[in-house]
Amino acid sequence: MGEKNEQGSDFVTLDVNAQTFFSSAPPLKDESDIAKKVKDFIAQNGEAIERRRLIGIVCVTSGGTTVPLEQRCVRFIDNFSSGHRGATSTEYFVKAGYAVIFLHRRGTCQPYFRDIPEDSFMEYFELNDELTVNVRQAHMEVMKSSIGNYHASVRGGLLLKLPFTTIFEYLQILRIVATSMDSLGPRGMFYLAAAVSDFYVPWMSMVEHKIQSSSGHLNVSLAPVPKMLSVLRNEWAPRAFCISFKLETDTEILLEKAEMALNKYKMHAVVANELLTRKEQVIVLISGKKITIRRTEEFRDVEDPLIDLLVQNHLEFAKQLQSNGSA
Ligand code: PMT
Image 1 (cartoon, rainbow, N blue to C red):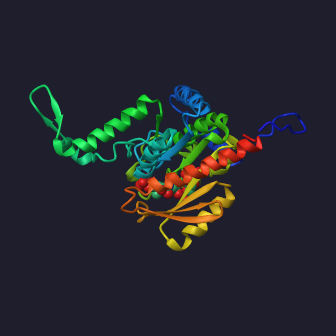
Image 2: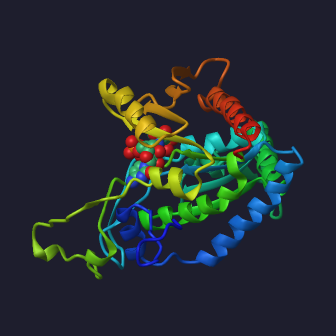
Image 3: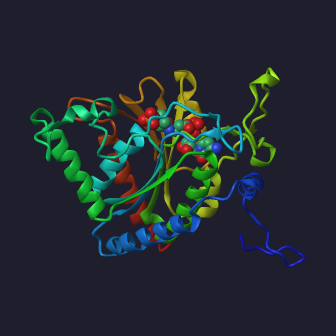
C-alpha cells in the first residue's frame, strides 16, 4: 500500500478479491480483544527473542474452516481436518525454542491433549472418596507429561490459542496476526497447516434464515475464496518465513501442485502430504530440494523431524537476512 495515483489517493495494492472478501465479511466478534492479546504476546516474546532466549514466534494454523450456508447459521460445509498436524507441530515448536500463536478450529485437537482420547477421557480418572479424584495408575505417566508440558508452555507465556470456526473468522484473525507479526521481521514464521475452504458463500448473497427443506432441490452458488498466501507474503508479513501445505488424494499430481504453490506464492517451503498417509510421511520442498520425512521407530511423530528441518532452515534464513541488513 502507500503509492499514490494521479488524483493523489492511495493505490490499494491488496488483491481486489481479497479486498472484496474482507469488506463484505461479517464483523469479527471480539476483534479488539484478539488484537490486544496478539500485540501483548508479540511484545513479551519479542523481548525474549532480542535477549536470545527464544528463536522466534510461529503462527501455526490448524483444523478446517467452515462455510456457513445461512447468516443465522444452522447448516455449514466442513472438511476432514482433525487439527492433529497443527497441535503436534505446536508441541515440537515450543520444544525447539519458539513461542506459538495457535490459530485453530474450535473443538479440534489441542497441543498436549492428543494423548488423552476424548472418548475414554473419564477412564483416566477414578473417584477415591467423596472428595478426591485420582488419575488411574495406568495413565499416570501420560498425564504427568502432558499436564507438565502444557503448564510449562502456558506459564512461560509461550502459547497463545486463538479459536476460529468459519472461513470469515479464520482469514480476519490471520490478517490481525500477520500484520502484527511483521514487526518481528525474519524471526516470524507462518506454518499454514489449516485446511482452508476453497469455496464459500459471500455474506451478502447468503440467506438470513434457515433454508427450508420444503423448497425442494437446493442450489447453492459458491464463490472461490481468494488465495491469501500471496497477500500474506507480499503485504501482511513480507519478511517472515512462510511454510504452506499441499494436500492431495492423488499421488500423481501432489508434487506438481506443491511445486506450483512454492513458485506461485513464493513460499520458503511447501509440505506436501497425501490424505491417507499424512501421519506417516510428508515431502518437504525446500531450498531446491525435495526431502521425504517418515515416521520411524526413532520418531514417534512425523512432525518431530519435520519441525527440526524447518527450524534449521528458518535459522539459516534469519541469519542471512540479518547479515544482509534487510531484517
Ligand atoms: O488436521 P489433520 O487431520 O492432522 O490433517 C493435516 C492436513 C492434511 C490438513 C495438513 O497437513 C494440510 O495439508 N493442510 C493444508 C490442507 C489444504 O487446505 O491444502 P490446499 O491444497 O487446499 O491449500 C494449500 C495452502 O493454501 C494451505 O497452506 C492453506 O492454508 C492455503 N490456503 C488455502 C485456501 C485459501 N483460500 N487460502 C489459502 O491461503
